[in-house]
Image (tube, rainbow, N blue to C red; front, side, top):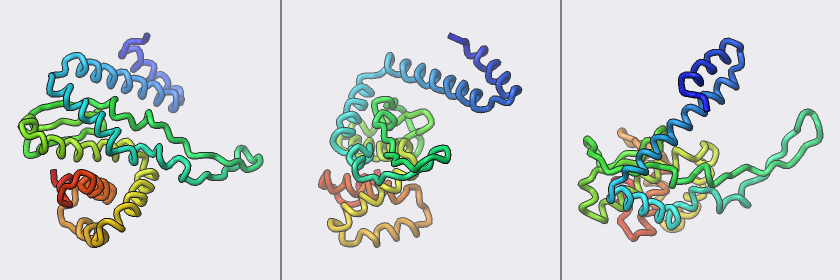
Length: 219
C-alpha cells in the first residue's frame, strides 16, 4: 500500500500529466482512508455513553428514518429514457443504494459544545451531543433526532431531497391543517437555519412521538 506521501506525489504527477480524473480518484482514496482511520479510532475509544448514543441512533434509523433512505420510493421514482452513444433509447432505472445513506458509518460523540446542544458535521460524518443533555433522556432523544435529520439531509443528493420533501408534504398536509402557513412563516423568518425538508421531517417526528409541533425543530 502506498504511503500518504507517495500518494501525494502520484497526485501531483497525474496533474502535471493532465490526468485530472485519475488525480481526483487518488485524492478521494486518501480522504476515504483518513475517514476510516478516524472512525476506527472513535470505535476503539468510545465511552459507554457514546456506545449507547450510537445504539439509539441505529434504533431511530429503523423506526423513524426509512422514508429518508429512499428504499420505500424505489418503485415510485420514474424511469428515465436516455440515448446511449447515439444508439437506440433505453430505459434507465434510478440507482438507489442504501449503503450510501448508512448512519452506522457515522461517529457519535458526547462532547462539550458552545451555545448549542447538538451539532452535525457532514464532512466528518460526526454527530456531537452536549453531555448535559444525557442527564435528561427526553432532551437527549429529541436532540439526537434533530441532528439525525441534518445527517440524512447531508447524505441525500439534492434531487432526492426534493422528492422526499414532496412526499413528506403529501403525508403531512391532511394531518396539519395550517402546514402551508408554517412553511411560509419559516421561509420568511429573518433567522432561517433549516430547510423546508428539515422542517417537514421534524414535524413528522413530532407527530409520531406525540410531541407539540416544533419540539424536534427547536431542539
